[in-house]
Length: 176
Image: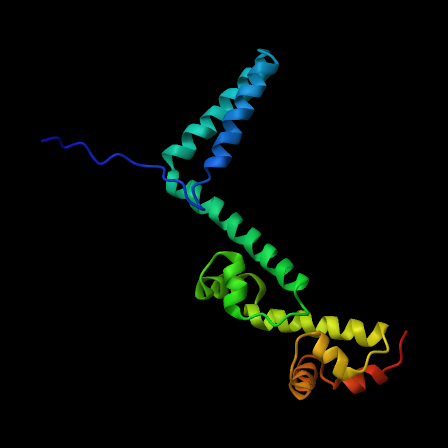
């Protein structure tokens, strides 16, 4: 019976960063393909050292890369919400888009932005409402429906809570 430890595997996954390693390897190849000048060799050796250490410290390498990935997911999710500000999205819709569970996305999102995904989405809706109030002659009921609110009174309460005044009072403010 062998007492060898179980071999470490590098299974692909959203945190495996295999594409990053392939890019490092391709950079080593292209550096040496370009020239065998001493500077190129030194650079290729440094890259190779980094490549090998990414295998040696696999969990740390994945963890650091995953933090960047999480950040990209939040930015992408915010962009998705902004592009769909006129729709009625649920937390499940937003989580499905991100590829994470609702609870994990909520936790990551709140840590990054200070808001839950749905609160942030409502902030985007009210910001869009302010823009429409300032730049159009649309009735407040039209703006409410355009932004996916079935209940005009809920829209008015949410607007008042966020802006500190009703949509009607906001419209009455002098424009600069």
